[in-house]
Image: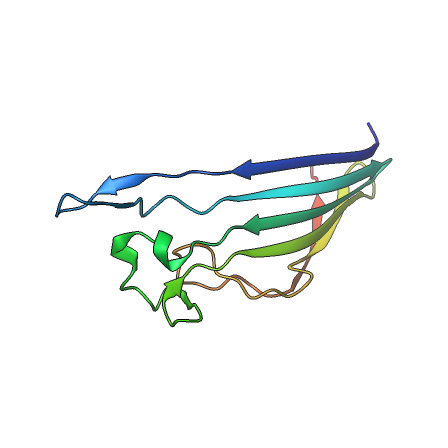
Length: 139
């Protein structure tokens, strides 16, 4: 089957936990809203996919109590408080079937070279990067 396709996914979760003093705090492992949307095109031996991945913001007031002291994991807001900023990446990938036994693939991830850090990971995501692959089927 060929032609254009479109899909979108969104995830939202919210939770609270009771802390030692009996009060409640936002759940530490409840990620901010996130999702993706993609447009794809397929024709004959070619497939192309343009995808937008996105992640929402968690403001200082909405961080779990345990996270408030971990400023090394988070960006600082205008008041110097830690928070998790929202981000997006735009990715372009392709796949081309050269024959029954040979496939070429490639793409560019983070086309706009966004600086981002997935929630609570402490590790920045990669900047713009390029991929190229060859797949050979041996029987």
